[in-house]
Image 1 (spheres, rainbow over the protein chains, first blue to last red):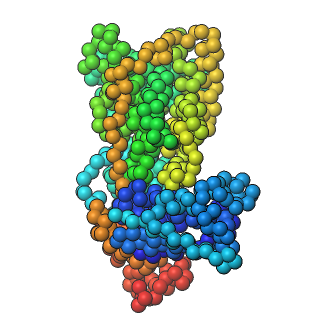
Image 2 (image 1 turned 135 degrees about the horizontal axis):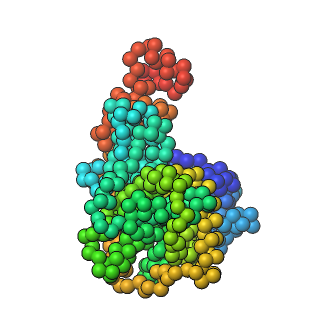
Image 3 (image 1 turned 135 degrees about the vertical axis):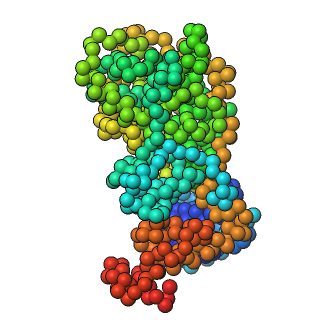
Length: 137
Length: 446
């Protein structure tokens, strides 16, 4: 099953719609609540990352009989230093974003913690594609 | 349900003589428990959580709550009216609490006991549970039985966040029964009758999640008793005996939204109203809200004064209770207050009685117990949903196109029931198209 969502830059109000929708499907499939939670947390973090840092993008979710693959692709600015971004507490979030309760530097580390497989392709000035996989069974 | 087993029972009933099949209740139900069949609303036992929203919105008064026969009182020599302060809040401030209670006695009760007598014990029970589970960050109050059931069916991952303690009325009924038994009265001759503001509390007494024995002998609807008392109040005698005001301000306000949360450690969230509760539970489930400690949740706006069996406007009732709470506070400060439960320790056997061993997840969303089968059904459901018009007209007898798609894959409905798809003539197709425009796909495409 395939789902597509669009991400709008700076729109924190709508962030979370993709994870809500995916959550409903996973509940219908009777997926273990622990795996549902991992999926939803990871997807939400990735969504927020794209809303807070990127210039908009798309989310593609594919669910098959054994796993869920979530691809969050944005249109820049890209991550200059991925090693730093993967460190807990490291953040380049703007003061405005921090004021909204985000930008604690836990996004990517949290995604890593909650997924079985994480791939990040990033190029400064072009964009970032985060591919997350969670095995459901 | 996949298992075909019924594990919830309810007191909400549909009067099929009055029901017009208008779909209002069906569209309101938070768990999608209602369908229209043969022109009448039917309620799925396993999906219904007794929130009472259907009854609140029914324009034909076709949904009602079955209560126990008032004549049941005659079976007992001692008849306790177990009442919440919510009931007192129904009456204007000019009526003294003692006058209201005196009317209850004239109606046949020998004793009046307020559920809120046990608030301090409830606080202790909650705190014990929270202290015993340091691994849980957010605890959900078990006060509103409809919230607990909603969590079981729609948020099964949160069942362990609900404090596993039974409702205060269970504790109060046991305490008053024991008190009378200590006076030498046999248990058989004591009848405890709870006055309920809603459907959920009846269901919690009759079909408890805990599966444990209850000391409540019967349940009476609050509106029924309100009408009886109001008629008597007008000519009530001024000589009514003063009553022992054992309640504190805190106790009086307990049934209101915000009555519980401030008395516990935590972020003091008090969430009320069906939509708000649903939204907050979603956030809790996604770990998308920082809510340490106790979160209070009530299905009804303003808490129990918003119950479907409360006759008075919820905001008016709230104000009245706040007024009375101040009076109780004055009594308290002037040391006129009699002994309350705070003076009696919470015994281990009471802790045992009040503990719920397990709150079982009862997901209604799961399509099939077998993952592969569920996956096939979900795929099919998505395809069907895409074929449906998406206008959620409810003419098929389901609350939405998504619900119809689900009913179809579960084998409970057929796609022919969709009036958009099943158009018999060009005239009917044109008529529908004149309302919905291009959403009506041409016949060969559907």
